[in-house]
Length: 509
Image (tube, rainbow, N blue to C red; front, side, top):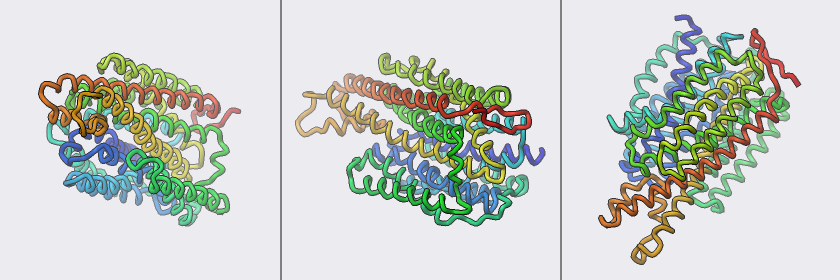
């Protein structure tokens, strides 16, 4: 294979691994919770401990890669990600798993930050559009097919294998990348923006930590308020420092482009509204409807297959022929409709009611992925590709963390309230109905039923299923509203940017 083909293959392998480890864990959460004795907050942290460092460090990592070398940072990310995966598999408690997941997230940030810049360095014009289509299909497919892979591994070998599988893949990718990927960097030779790197990293860490911690610690607690305020102040300081820097880590002038700003906003909204809801779909399927981890993953196939096919076709056939605005608008419309169609599960309490929505959502989600990647790469010269793609991907990862936390708060509150209402007057004095509701929301229906009297289990099972399906319906309504906001952003902010055969875009205002 040529060097370009190897670069595309290895970047896709790395992207598949790092994004798979967001969605693959989703299906395994009930098994992890039971095996490690985790609660609802522990279940959330198994996701957020990974996404938080990716969100906080992605843009600093992209800037560092532009300066020190993208191949070098890519290799460091592969090594760290692979070693941390071994740590996740060896975890004996929730804390150990969360720490290993955080280290894994640092490696993921290094990989994600260099993926698109490495492709941008090798591909131009129509070849770049085709490469972005393949990469985007990998991205969409990894997010969507994760529940299936996670289910198969969890049911067949145990949840630890969702991490062990990364070891041979990571070693292969590292060895191959040593000789098959060319080094590239910003030729201007700018120095590392240490103040910007520190301020942005701390600012995003504070904001994302405050959001994901708010559900369990309380939104008015000192730790949450302190983290949010400190994070906001750090981000304000970052903007002031970057505005005065001669060679900033993030050129604020990028945001003068409505299309670039729109791409960042849309990336954030898709991740918050759509990907953020996946964990709660899985909880309903396993804890509410009684499917195994593999069974839950199989029921994600309509979204998985459509996402993969749609992303590939968009990159190879549609980009370059239609405007960015048209493609993003067409992608956001079915995504919005599809998510709202899935709310039917609240009325039927059957996964079959979600199938039409999964199909339509998969088509729209897959279509949007290569278009957003093209906007990020086309916003700046290739030398500064890491800066632009890092900003857009940071918005994407912050969206995942915000979505998991925000939608999780809504889901837990709805499920807990319905269980408390349903159990009113049926429990002995001193038995906390709210704690039972929180356990059901965390996917602990099996444990709740095991502790209940035999004669009450059937009614309690029906109550739990109804509460989980109604909770998910509320989550999906909010997700649909968020997707509608992404549609409006595509119409209002994205210019009719037409990509020429040479791969050079020009915004038509």
